[in-house]
Image 1 (cartoon, rainbow, N blue to C red):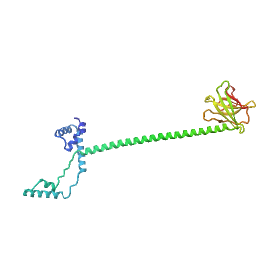
Image 2: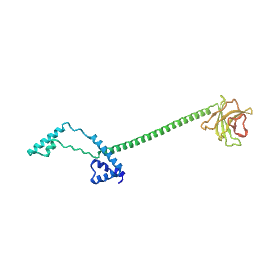
Image 3: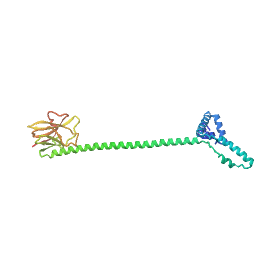
Image 4: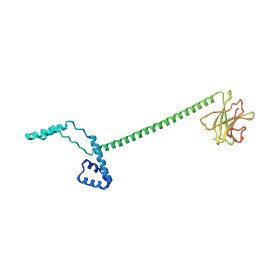
Length: 277
């Protein structure tokens, strides 16, 4: 048996507590001579045992010495009178037995088990706390996302309602602008308020322009194009986009220009056009 087997086998504890058999005592003593670490382990165990016994010891009563002398005198007198019995000794001074064993090992084992149990409970508890925290944070993110989407949808609905109100205004004139010959599928509509002179454009079907391009609305007045401003295609939920106001116009048209607009329309890039009359 090597040194580690001696130390982990429990033989040392049995030896120190007096519970080892004669064969075990001989085997351990040989191991103590052969392995210094075994001898050191025995010394440590004895020291631990002494400390445990000291902790568990009790101070004898102050009248113990007097009681012992009293028992001896009574026992001698009883022996001479022929009336001595073992029960008298037991009744007079009950025997107290103190069992000193490897109890400290069980205490240490129990402490270790409690420690491991505590660590496990902490692990489980904090794991649950982190799990609940993660779920709470996920729910919070979801709630915030839903709230943001709800606000977005609400804003879109309000925009659409405003657009419908404008389109239903009796003073509003709708000017349809179908696609030109190069762009037959294109379509847009101008809403022109005859009283306030406000102009709005609605994109029905126009292809998404390149990043450096932008659509521009034109009004034809006395045969000449008048810039009505550029507009974006990035918000399909915005039905009507407000353009520049105008008093009178013969027709409206949309061309594709460089981003920011052009002072004159590019005629070969005219996508839609429609008469205002």
